[in-house]
Length: 533
Image (tube, rainbow, N blue to C red; front, side):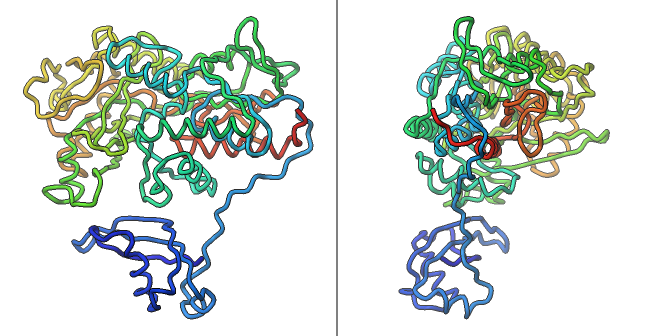
């Protein structure tokens, strides 16, 4: 096939017109355009007219003649994924994967495709039972510490917007996209400029990937928490699930998420090399989605054919601290995301349609190990936990979340009522009008106020007085980095142990976590010979 760029369609044009546009653009008869596969779609709103712009891989009747005639055309690159060649080191037991979020899922899929029959251990529930547990928490405030928005099949990303945008430029991204589509995600994620799956479509997708792993010989065990590592002479030789149950293996992938605090503590006790790392904390901010559409599209209403508008904002305070929006959820909800009793955590979630009335985003302030007042590798965990406990107390002790109007927050005054406001907070179980002075340290409050004022210059209405702030967003990324060798991806302190994904500090989001899972699986395949079990 031949890659063709800058194919432009109007918003109202059907996708079937692509062949006609290609024919016109290359000045060839329509019947010579045999097949079109979209590679990329973007939006061009310049010059006052909104257009969809495509790059496509196209099959033509006479490709050789076309390449000769149009010197700017090239053959489409081969994006097929190929497993690496197996190594020679003996592998007598099946590799163990701890955690079944994006990193563990794709590490498991690659190892299963290569014939290594991994055993995957997930502390939370399968996605169906997990959904029931999460719904019950949102309705009643009864938390399941082992199965919630953070823990369970698919990881924290299952209850999110299912964003697949990433800053990494890795060819493995295509493998991830293809597998998601094969498992039921919308095909458009292969070419959309800002692809997302939505939590409603992501749930059956992760279930289908699990089924594929099992079909290939892997095992996936839910409600199975790893309580300890078994280490002998600096080599991991298995994991301990309980006093009476162990699984032996000299290959263990630790693909736990950013909220697996007890697992971080267990690894620290086992002298696994790690350190505190920078991350960010803050709140969720909610606006009417209609307002975001109007500002971003410079229109009184959302143009037909376009989805709910997004934004991405950054600001640097006068003292050099970063304030930024994160994980923006158009037409979404703010959701209760606690994983520990006695702490309030919030996050954002959207379904595929993105059709709720509010837009929400994290509004985060960067924090560094210098802010933790301790040199302990898990000092960041305690920093997060302190904020979450304060939010729990301020909210009333029943997982109600503290909320504050932006206008009150900017003046340092408590919000006493939300009645009559133009924006209804979407958080469940219940929002509680509060004062963030009782939760955050001064440096975070100061940075958020300065950031809100600065971001108003970028997006008019962002700091409107009736916008809703909900606390506390504390799990944007891992507070820990578990050290590993740069090439082999093996722990620097324990042989056979492979820190992986977002929880280990090597990814941020679904796509980069999945890619890191693939990279770790490849490192194991390159090292270990074909299994004999």
